[in-house]
Amino acid sequence: MADANQQSPPPQLGPVQFLMSNKLETAMWLSRLFTVYCSVMFILPVLGPYAAANFYQRALLANALTSALRLHQRLPRFQLSRAFLAQALQEDSCHYLLYSLILVNSYPITMSIFPVFLFSLLHATTYTKKVLDSMGPNSMMFIRNLLDKLTSNQQNILKFIACNEIFLMPATVFMLFSGQGSLLLPFIYYRFLTLRYTSRRNPYCRTLFTELRILLEHFIMKPACPAFFRRMCLSSIAFISRLAPTGV
Image (tube, rainbow, N blue to C red):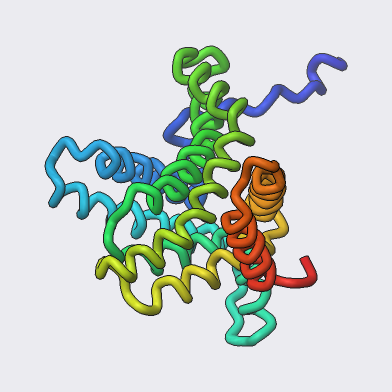
């Protein structure tokens, strides 16, 4: 009698059923995979420089789509208000929606595609594991091992992304003086960088700024460091510190 009353576990969904039952997550997963593909085709321009430039734009547009979907998932009820805008600007997905729109028409450089590529790769990893689980607990162990290695290096990858975010700021200034960027690009990108600095969910940009400052101060305080170089670095540190957002 007790056995008859026991409920059997729900049947496991197959991969197709799993994907169709999570349409928004699946759409973001596919757009992230497409971003990864386009990023790789840009970084490794096997089809030539013209095709690589097209893949650069496609990667950023696909990332913009992913970020918009993620932002809609986080804030489903759109409101045309200042409070909603302030809340949206606190979301990492909004940051990278702006990032993609800022750089999509700029001169393509590899440094600007790495954050998009690596974030898409990291986020796609989690959902890929779920898809593999729907195929069976021991399915495609080779891919599972690769995903596990990627996950184990997540902290280093996030630090590398933050490093790219930081050093892309002087790169935009260099692009301006070399005639490859617009006058507004450094100012708009500075706004993006302040959003990353104040991010609540991803402190790596703020942490890396601190680590770089400590490292540079340690280097310039050595007796072998020339005095003029020390003064120049201290002035640069003070200038950058004044630009940093307050109240973080």
